[in-house]
Amino acid sequence: MIKAANTILYCSKWEDTVRFYRDQLKLPVNFSTDWFVEFSLNAMSRLSVADEKRASIKTSRGKGITLSWEVDRIDSAWTDTEKNGLAPTPIRKHPWGARFFFLFDPEGHRIEFWQSFADLT
Image 1 (spheres, rainbow, N blue to C red):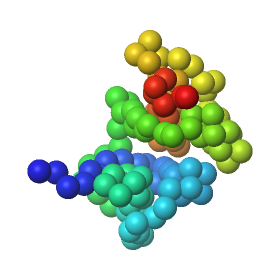
Image 2: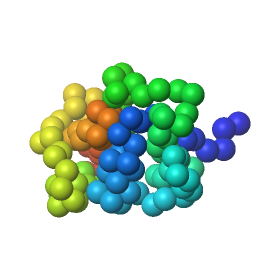
Image 3: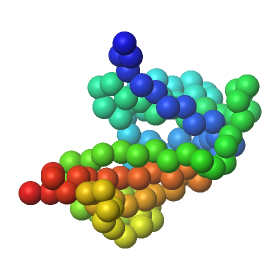
């Protein structure tokens, strides 16, 4: 059984990407070296950013990757990201029953923030 999950993004713009997740999205740092930073998303999920110059895997340059994060309050998440100097897309409605918006990190990875219509009461 899987106890925890960690997604690792290999980056050519590593320092910019670390600042994006740490300083603008305000994700807590769980572990850090001079080429690898692990952020906590929640108790069981993590997101790591690795410098491709020090890794055996190279960047995908954001192609084919979407990080999809369910949030408690979509409007607050949108406001927070805008206040932190990011450029969130407008909040839209998914036909499958959610409201969502996107951001892009410095590597071009798409981040989807979403909240279920059922949670909007």
